[in-house]
Length: 219
View 1: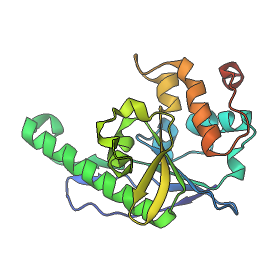
View 2: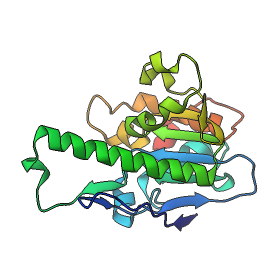
View 3: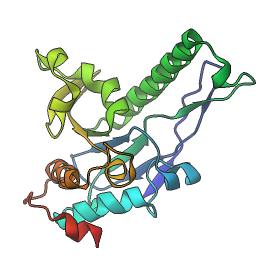
């Protein structure tokens, strides 16, 4: 795995680029998977990378992929953290009015979305797997189903929805985050959904079997 710097300067002086490096695993394959994590994991934040190959998140994904005989090292993928910008100003967020705070949140979402779209245009994935809600909200309006706008976010889980982003045609997969399921606060912490994440990984990476035993992963 290699780590790549991807610059998308902030146009707002109070929003700073966290500079999470993209994680890239390159193999000779037509299939290209983009893994989009809504938030950075603890080790990812410490190392300023999108996917730490020595961290818990990588271990979770690699364990599931290995279980399905579809090891990550054999796959062509890139990982990116969606929430890449943070607030940094002499005025603390706690001192902002509701209107000002909303404006900052909208600016963050805009910058994060623009950066992600630039990465998609450059990488040209065949599949995009988005973990947790924030990243999925940024991409769901690119789904080409005629009824997509009327479908709740939860109904996209585990479904490869056809997607058109600029000149990139791909499948968009929504998934819970393994770290949220293992370590998040209730009600998002639910180990029984870990097999669901595993099946999504199996489908995207072309595994031949979808059966899953979470006790193997937890060993």
